Image 1: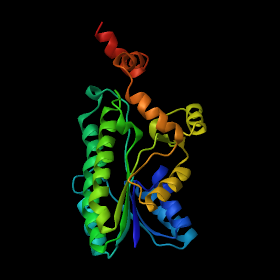
Image 2 (image 1 turned 90 degrees about the vertical axis):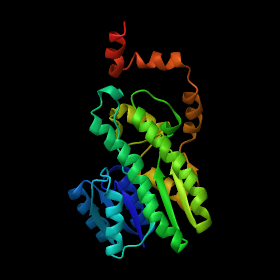
Image 3 (image 1 turned 180 degrees about the horizontal axis):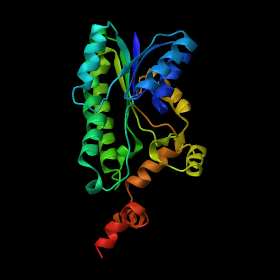
Image 4 (image 1 turned 135 degrees about the vertical axis):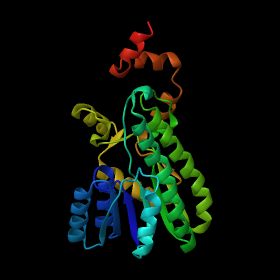
Length: 265
């Protein structure tokens, strides 16, 4: 049996792969669009921990990517009992200034491919009456945030979708866990080093390996949803209920929106 991790070549995806191989001695199927890094990690995990580590290069933002991956696994007799949907992207920009292709890429990657991977591999797991799925949502899935409108909306989909699947698949011995982290300490968000250290200190953000350890434990326990970090449980309702004037107050101080407010004067 294999654990399939998408976005496995860097960041928290690499941490998931390492923790599963090192701490759980689980064979891993590493999927990413970074071919060189993927091959290097597969070799490293295999040699260091004595597990089977297989690399599968793919651009998961393509509509046919999920079906191709599932067919490849079937043809190569690779059975997946853990699916970790981690691949993702992030940008902070007003929607009308984002290239249309970039919008479509995020929506495809975060929602369509994730849903179809759950569809294909979830059916296999339900047939075997065994399996675990971990989907990376986000704390922002609870919010309406200008600038990351596509990101937080797609993560809201992941959260709702995963919780619904938990009910559908649990009778078949399959659990689906939605992770809603505040942030993970990787370059994904483009934060400066000082801000990153502060977020880690406050437990808003987690180092990738520490987060992966917590997430995998929650998945094994069959949790429907998990939000690591005590302060995140306070932050979510506070930001969720911000009045409109407070949101506009914050927007006016962000460089991304200075041009918008200047044009509306």
